[in-house]
Structures are given as structure tokens and as C-alpha cells.
Length: 468
Image 1 (cartoon, rainbow, N blue to C red):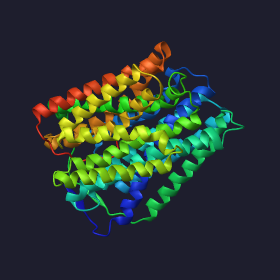
Image 2: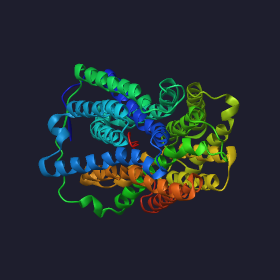
Image 3: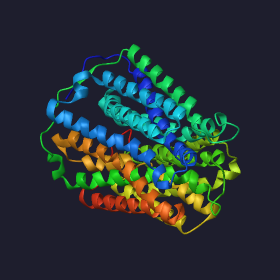
Image 4: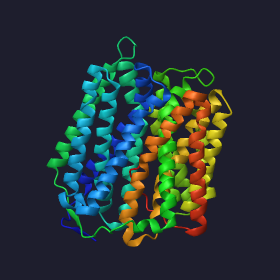
């Protein structure tokens, strides 16, 4: 049970928190820009360059485990210090992580870059733990799903803008005569440090409503008695891993002569389409999975939302309309996928996962612009996976829901491990054929969706913000 001690307007607190969602989406996606930059700078193998994701997402796992053990032994830390202080601490740690890019750039040391990313990941872990439930509490309970959807959309906006802005700063603006240097990351991450400090100051000065939980943490691992949770943990593992794998390799993949042979300064715009696809799909998912809207009205809302978000993305990327018209075709396929899913979370998850398996296989066995568009379009079908897997996994857990949620957050470890696996295969067989790794991940997610459609029926989705 949650006690609300304030009943003021939540507009300013919510606006502040959506900025947090935007920033951690932005910084997380900056890793996809860092990987090709650091790979060239330090002459790394693909496996070595994937240590960027290993350290960043590994911090999520370690941070979540520490938080879980602390909660088990001494009680929930956020409940003791408050949501606001938890978010302030997360911002402070994230600011330290960003600032450490300065000495890493000065000494041009790959190990220091990895340490900075690990600390940054720890800060984001605490932000996730504190901010996600806090957003759901800022208002009436029946509006929680809507607020989380909106916050998640801002997270997607951050992941869409990051490749364009971050790529411009690192590959062009701060590059020295077009050459790759460690110092190119120095100023961008000092700017990010300042933004996190400014956000912390704003958060400190704003009077936030105080919420306190009276729920107690269940002892043991009773949540694991539920098969949907055990399977869902692997589902989150493979989803985050597959999504991060593809995002991490897109810039290097598009540079291949048999694909597009384009430089980082151009491919960063196509990377933005990959992450922008998730934003489009999330808006469509919010409408499609809304049981209160039906028929022609739902179709109209979905088409209007898709057009509006597409125009937003088009205004962000430095590409002509002719260069991205193929993306509209796959947006149409995405709409069709929602209709086949019939607003059933498990069915929609299974359909989208199977489409992604097909898209990745088409990428592996083709070349040129077609292979580029099939891999970029995977983002459209990633959109609803986090929310659907999470909700299906915790369905029916009752008093074990919080424990199950923490175990699912730990499964973000997939973002640390699967890119390493693909990196190893990329070194041995080339990037092109290494994409079978995320294909296997999506195949498992399709199985999970099929299992839940048979065992759980038409479970109502409560969108969960955050994730990758």
C-alpha cells in the first residue's frame, strides 16, 4: 500500500521526471556511437569493442543484485531514503560517470572509458529503481499506465536523437581535422555531466510529493514458483540482448562495402531510424492494446500517430524523404502486425518476435540497401516487447510482484552478454552472419509469447516504462 502525503499538482514533477527518462534514453544510445569510435581509436576487435555494452549493462545487473540483497537483509533502501533522494543519488552517480570520460580522454585509456561506463550504468540503475514506480504514483491510479507510456515515449525520443546529436559531436564537431581522437568524447560528456548536475539541482529545488510504501519484502525466492516469471526472465534477457546487439553493430554494418559503404557521419542517421522505430511502435502499441478503443476509431488513431511520429523523426535525421521511403513500407507491416495481434499482449508479442526473426534472417542472406532496411526495421517490432514481456511475467504473482520485478530488472544482463557473444562471432565470421545471435533471441521470445497465449490468455497490459 502507498501513502500519499501531498495532493498538489503533479505537472512540474512529472515534467522533470520525463526529462530524466529522455536523458537516460539519450545516454544509453550514445553507447552505439561510442562503439565504432572506440573500436577505431584503440584498434579493437569486435569482441573487445562490445565491452562497452558489457560494462554498462553489467552495472545494471550488479546494481540490481546489490539492491535486491540489501532489500532482503535490511529493507527497501528507497523506502528508507525516499524516492526523491534515490533519484538525486542516481543523478549524482551518473554525473560522476560522465565526468570520468574527461580523464579517460586525456589519458586515452580504454580501461578508464569502461570504468566510466560502469559507474554511469550504476547511476542509471538507481534512477530506474526510483523513477519508474514514482511516475506511476504521480496522479490517479487509473492513469498510471498512461503516464508510464508517455514517460517511455520520451525515453524513445532520447534514443532517437542521440545518434544524430551524439554522432555529430563525436564524429564531426569535436573531431580534429576529421580524425578520430580520444578528446572527441571529452567535451560531449562534460556537457552531459553539466546536464545531470542541473537536473539534480532542479529536482532538489522542486517540492515533490512524498510517497511511502508500507509493503514488506517477501523472504526467499517464492516468485520463482511461477513458470511465467522464470520464462519471462529469459525473455527480458534475450530481448534486451538482441536489441542492444543490433544497435551496437549498425554503424559498422552499414560501413561494409557489400551493404552501403557509408561513413559514421551518415550511418548515425540510419541508426536514429532504428531507435525511432521503437518510438513509433510504442505509440501504436499504446493505442492498439487499449481495450477501450475499437474499430475504425482505433485504426484512425494509429495511422495518425504513426504519421506524426514519423514526421518528428524525419525532422531529426539528416536524410531526404526519398532516402527513407522504404521505412514507410515496414511501418505498414508493423501496423498489420498489430491487427494480427488483435490487442492480445501475448499474441502480439509472438507475432512481433516472429517478424523480427524473419527480418534478421533476411538481413543475413541479403546485401545492399535491402539488408539495411530489414535490420533497421527490427526496431519497429522491438517496441512493445519490454512492456509485454514484463507484464506477462508478473501476471498473477500477487505478494511476490515486487520480487519478480527486481528479478526481471536483473535480466537486463542480456544487454551485457549477448553483444559479447555476437562480437566474438563477428570477429570469426564477419558482422553480416553474426546476426544469427539476436535471431535466436527473438526465436525464444516468440516461444514465450506462444506459451503465455496458451497458459495466461488475454492478459491486460500495464505498460512498464524504462527498460533499455
